[in-house]
Amino acid sequence: TIGGAGGDIGFDGDNFSEVDADGDGQISRSEWRKWVAEKQRIMKAANKDRETLVNENRRLRMAMSPSAKSAAERSRRNDERLIELEAEKAELEIQRNVDEAEFKASLDEAKQVSARLQKMIFSMLDEVQDRPELAEMPAFVEVQRLLGPGFVERE
Image 1 (cartoon, rainbow, N blue to C red):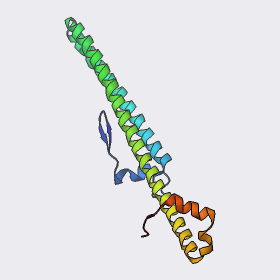
Image 2: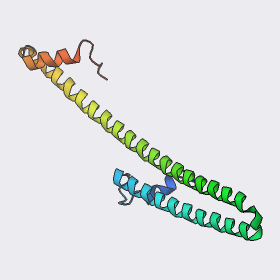
Image 3: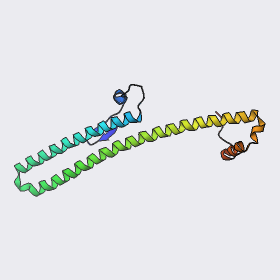
Image 4: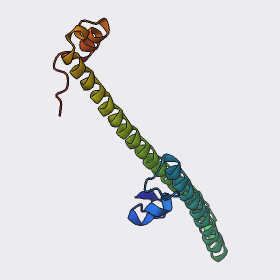
């Protein structure tokens, strides 16, 4: 879920089709960012509405009790600061979720590249086993040096 000042904005299977704009069954980074930007816009609008309500409440309190002006002024400043902090918190939580999703996508991509590289290396090692004359080549000797003894076991 994505937390906000007004509660959590959940992301589950019900929201998937809303985020997956092109309907390909996968959420791309651009689709995710577009969805998050829309949620941020909604949160800003909700915070603005909330600020309007707080200001109206303050105005009504002042009309009912003019002697409470200093307390109302302190309350107003506190309310404004609270609204600012809640809006900042909501934006930071949304950004954290975006960053976490991007990190996970980058990590998954790195794992895929690593797996492909490992396959290529094993393929090369298989070829060298079948052709001993290649084992003496400087490029292969350098690969062996870089991999070191006890390179990852094959699955």
